Length: 220
Image: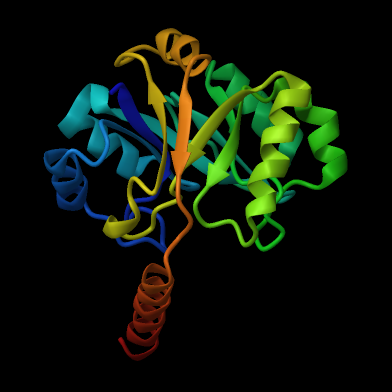
């Protein structure tokens, strides 16, 4: 069956997500996925906490707002500060020998890199997220796949989960479990991609929880 890796989830370390450690534990217990890449917004706190508990089943990453669009790093050791610009952010990722991961690169509803930046930095990108469950239009995933093919990038997939029920909506299937960075990258060369779009009830639930959270902040 292979090893299922959801390469893009958020924990409550992201200010717009609601996934706690116990939810991750439940996902593993139910066998929905085998490994997770935690990509919180501008933070690695949730990823490090999960790594302490589940060790080799968690890859530490961060989805970074560069100020010019989002980019992510995986196999991180230290947090990368936001708003440094794309050039300095990539330089900081390279200093850590992190793997550079490009999330939802063509989804116009989110803070993505401008096309000119994608072209300029294409050779520095290791993995392109070719399936993201939350893209506004499926053709954005197809565009990401085409970009990866054209530039010789590896292909990733992730649910972009902000709720527990969303984890595992998209993932890659690796031929074997990969503990180290080099083995993971090598296995990704032979990975299969599986995914589905975010469901309506998931979208409504997330909207409701975010709205409730904003109301609580206003009155508390």
